[in-house]
Amino acid sequence: MQRFSLKDSYKLYEITPQTDAEIQFLQQFHNEDFDFWRESHFVGEATDIMVAPENQYNFENELTNYGLNYKIIVEDVEGILQQQEIENGMKRSLLGHGSVTFRSYMLLNEQYAYLQHLGQAYPDIVTVSSIGRSHEGRDILLIKISSSGSNTYLSKPAILIDAGIHCREWIAPPVALYTIHQLVENSSNAALYQNVDWYIIPNLNPDGYEYTTTVNRLWRKNRRHTVGAPCVGTDLNRNFGYCWMCGGASSNSCSETYAGPEPFSEPESQAVRNWLLSVGLLLDIKLYLSFHSFGEYILYPWSYQQTLTDNADVLHQLGVRAAEAIEANSDIGSHYEVNSSAIGLYIASGVTSDWMKGSHGVNLSYIFELPNGDAPFWFMIPARQILPVVRETFAGIRAMFEYIEETFVYGTALPPENDFIIRRTLD
Ligand SMILES: [Zn+2]
Image 1: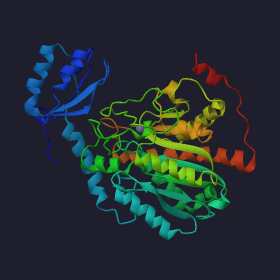
Image 2: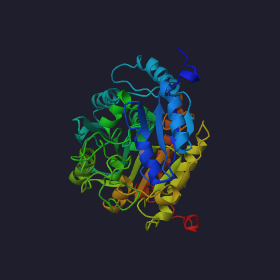
Image 3: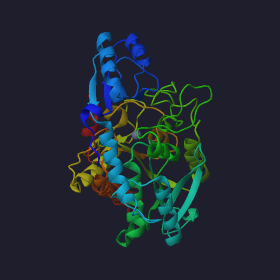
Image 4: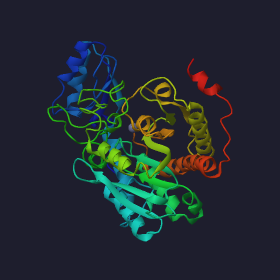
């Protein structure tokens, strides 16, 4: 492998403007010589700019002359990207069609080939369908795993899982795929789909995912260009229609948290909504899990405001139960915080978990922020840590499944012990 000396490396700079004038000043660097990885839209929000070796001297001088402080947050961008490329690519070439691996990141068509393979190999329990198409025309695949096969009329308590809505969060789809793999291909888990049906969308933003594997590893949004807007892409996890644009979302299309021109303006969020509306009366979704990274959080509604739901005690205790199962099975020292989204992380509106709870009455609704492991930079958890993450996370999912079965199948679950933990977080 070729080594780059630090002198010759692309570097990533972080600058946090303290005035509007400084934000404007940074915008002059918007040209082909500079690559904005993240951009300030208000005072105090950081901008990250990747700068080529030949431009670094002048760039640093210009910032200093203007009185702007900067930090070099990645000294060797190519080194990181190349290391990941090597680690992923070498093993990928061994992957046969329809196979799955948790030792490298899979391409979208590999993920889809695996789902189709399961549909063909296990027709009695697996049903693969498309809930709609992405903006660029890719299917959004849903896999159902049930002892009743594809028969929706015999619906039992259901668990709905999605991953990949933020496409740069690469560790999320493997968690969904590992759950599928364990349910379908590990016969010792057959009991998990006898009384409960599983619906899993392993990659909710296929255009974006494809884009992260070909053009920009740090892309987060979908790939649709809102008519008349300056920038491409809507944050799908701000586009759902429960209290849309109530805070923590942007009306600026250039923002990473652009909510879209209206609720459900995007084909990907429409696909989820339309599917749920079409099967909603037939399905009895008891648990919704959406996988993101990173930060090691298990978060429940509300996300749009810092007040708690009527069932926050139950949400919290079940979250803690999952966190304990994950930590007990962790080889990488994961430690989860459990809280409401808005209190534990930040306010965000138009997110899937609020919509599931608020609009569809799915009372047990969660967002997981998975670990970042030894990632050298955001979202770049190395391929060798996929397996420990998916294994430990499946232990958490299983703990939640057990609660669903105890509560809605056997009726043996105990009510929450007390509510002191919840109240404390509101102090
Ligand atoms: Zn996310």
